[in-house]
Structures are given as structure tokens and as C-alpha cells.
Amino acid sequence: GDSVTQMEGPVTLSEEAFLTINCTYTATGYPSLFWYVQYPGEGLQLLLKATKADDKGSNKGFEATYRKETTSFHLEKGSVQVSDSAVYFCALGSGTYKYIFGTGTRLKVLA
Amino acid sequence: GAGVSQSPSNKVTEKGKDVELRCDPISGHTALYWYRQSLGQGLEFLIYFQGNSAPDKSGLPSDRFSAERTGGSVSTLTIQRTQQEDSAVYLCASSLEHGASYEQYFGPGTRLTVT
Image (cartoon, rainbow over all chains, first blue to last red; front, top):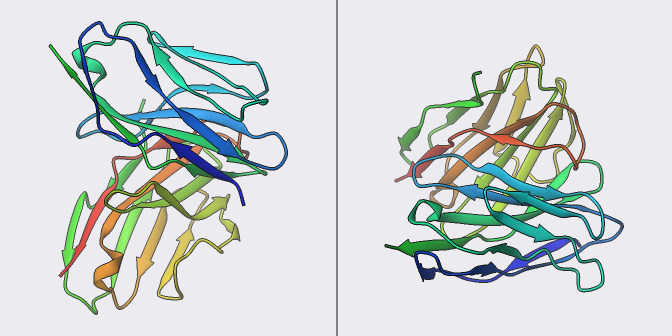
């Protein structure tokens, strides 16, 4: 069945460091891909998405490119801030409705 | 505008008791989803509604779990005879339309603890 695998955390970085959180997927057909973020004490919110191969989603300085050839959707940010500390979830939209989420990666950014 | 709301935010119950969890989706959203987030796990899909109907109930863990949606709006997830393994955060999400490419808006969740 469809699945999402993302790198385990926690990831600890200093402010202004470069961030990469890896995400790979297995799916039949052509899923949509998402990154959701969960800030402390808050609900999940969509960070960015891509609906077809080679699309790049971007928001708040974060980017991810839908790579069909490597079945990946890695999240990147050039310079992280303390306020980026959160749990990041990679997800795919499969079939007509089902979302499949990764286990989440906790990011901690130190000042 | 108002987002997805869930109640209660926290629920502690004794093993064997029944619990009801409520979700108020964003007004006008036709699709509603329930997920379970256990410690250290990703989100586990439970059930979704298109309007008031639930085309796929296969994600429900057991027959102790049921859900309904009325008036195309509020949804209730009921867990009967709760067990300790039911302890988790239950998340509700809604989207404008039904479909995997639509953004889902999540509520803050209900943290259920079964003692």
C-alpha cells in the first residue's frame, strides 16, 4: 500500500543553519504531496504542497520539490529561525481522499 | 474566520466507559476527516465524511468505534468500552471539497487518556 517515510528526529540546529528534512513515498498513481507543521500547543497546518511531478511548493522560506524519479519530497530552508521549532509531517494524498502521514520530525532551533 | 474546533480538549476516562468526541468543521466544508495520533506515531486515518455519509469506515480500529455527522456539519466520534490502547490524540480535519489534493484544516485535537 501507499506509505510515507520521513527522517527521524529530533533535529537540532543553530539559528541561520540550513535545514533538510527527508521524505520519500511509495504510491500507485500520482499522489499529491504535502508538508504540514505543528507548532507547540497548536494544531497541524499546511505548510506547502505540490500536486504533480517537478512542482515546487514554497511558503515562509520553506521549499520542497516533487521528485517522481526519486519518489521524494524533501523539505528545505536556507536559514532557520528559533520560531521554526515545531514538528513537521510529510503526507501524501492518495486516491480520492486518503491522506497518509509520516511519523513527523521534530525540529529544535537554538538561538 | 473560525477554524475547526474540537471538544473536549482533554478527556480522562476509566477503562470500560464510553466517550464522545466532537468536531465542528469550518462552515461550508463538505468533507470531514478523523485521525488518531498516538505517541511517537504518525497520524492514523480513521474515517471520512462526504456530507453526512461515510463511504469508507475501514480505518476504524474496531467495532467499538463509530462516527456520525449530522446536517453536513458537526461530527461525533464515539468510542465504546474504552481500552487503554485507545489513549491518543484524536484529530479532526475538514476540507472545502472531497479529494486528496484539497488542503485539510485541522482542529487542535482531543487528548484522550484511558486509565
